[in-house]
Length: 101
Image (cartoon, rainbow, N blue to C red; front, side, top):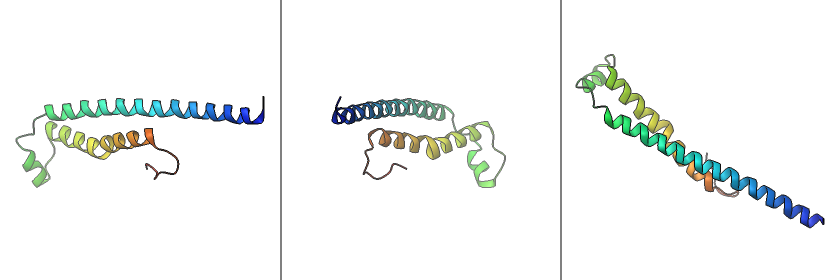
């Protein structure tokens, strides 16, 4: 085997590994989006507490619906939505482009 063939073979292997990793990242992105949608559905199913405004305004102890809604809103906004965007970008990122994170 010539050195050119070995180099090309190595490149093919590297490209196959990169393709495998990209597919795994894309799959993780889809799974993450499904989880995100599930949490959004749970959030939508929990009606606000009748005391929610009072709790927020007066700094009172949270009741169950206020805690669930507050926690899920933070998880979705701070982690899930950014993670979904980053995974999607990472699955198609190419060297020379601006880093995803």
